[in-house]
Length: 77
Image (tube, rainbow, N blue to C red; front, side, top):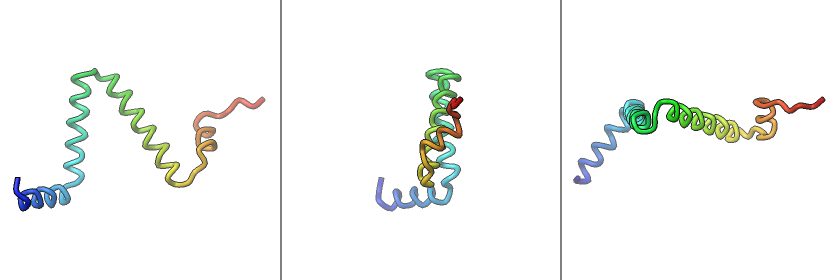
């Protein structure tokens, strides 16, 4: 592939980021569902979402211990 074609391809992706990445994610999910099954794929998706959620909260400088206690309250009697 020539450099000019590569640059055109990159520009095309930049103009349609959502469509491009959505298609890639959809393709990966389809492969996972067909190869390992629906519920295992759902479990992977939920773990990925939880990791993203916790990571974004940490990026916002939230205290990890307080964040976990909001999700899973400790039993203090």
